[in-house]
Image 1 (cartoon, one colour):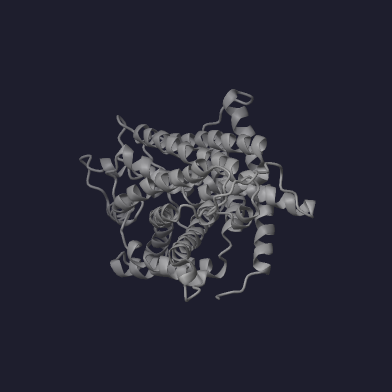
Image 2 (cartoon, rainbow, N blue to C red):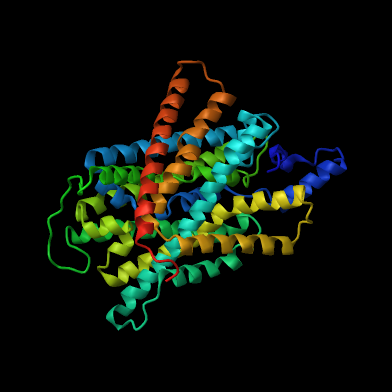
Length: 466
């Protein structure tokens, strides 16, 4: 883990009439090669669809299940609070990107180093961010595989002569990323990210339009059923509490864009007269409008239509639960596949940046195509292997939502704001940040415990690699 403040150099303005020394030239050459800072020509709308792709992902598909455990009142409160708090903390990160004159904090850990010190900042931020980014990519491996499996089952129905296990579908989905991962930087995946953002809005619309159209009918059925909106208590209150905790983690997982927001902002050109925060914030606002248009209808309409249906509770993914009409669910699952392809790459780019920086600066490998080919291919293999080994979709959402997303999304930006901006004690800013910190810490503990409990339950009935 290399000190990252070198990335904060204003690389757009290096042509200032002075010849850079060899170290500065070498550093600039490296920054121009790395995936985060390799191209700084993005527009504000790039930021918009990159953020949509990063945020509106697998998490939205589990929100109706989360609502089943949280029920109407608490569920709506949690959804609205999460939207407001995470928009606030995202604004903080956009503002802090260039809060020190002459520097750009292009990576999350660089901002952490400014707030907590060179070494402590690395150890606080880097493990958390890597857990988030790698965790998302593993979950997206599972999501892509499950969507492929759902399409196969819906299309062949009873004529399926072969029951293909989820492991093979994850392998098929993951194989595509051996090629996509060789795209050099963020802007090189802008076309894929735009397609992914469009797909995310489209399949989210289908996910709530189906239950809105067919009301309280179960998938594939023309009969109307009564929807029970009470908390689905089981035989053990402890188990129900764990499921409620896991539902909180599912909501936290749905707001994941903070872990790549500085890296996305790094692709936007900046100067003292036109700082990057203005176009970046415009893109973030557009993205959050799309997030609201996706999350709230899927959560509320899905819960209204299906209530506490046991099948949806056990599946945790509304698109694998819905099967009526078949052709529309097939289209929606295809859209999910396209979206998670783009989202996987959005979260993988900062990981590639970290690995390639380490290999070049610490281990002195020359920056080359071969280095990228080996490093990125090994990363794809790793995420594919873990996804195949632990394909517990719903439980993974809750666990990663609590363990990793809550800190980096809900309260770590607030702590950094207190350290860097230093608002006056008991001012509105100071109080707001402490409220977010307290709520975020509570969410972290509850969701992590609930997610781990569900993983243990899922693992007890799972047979590996079948």
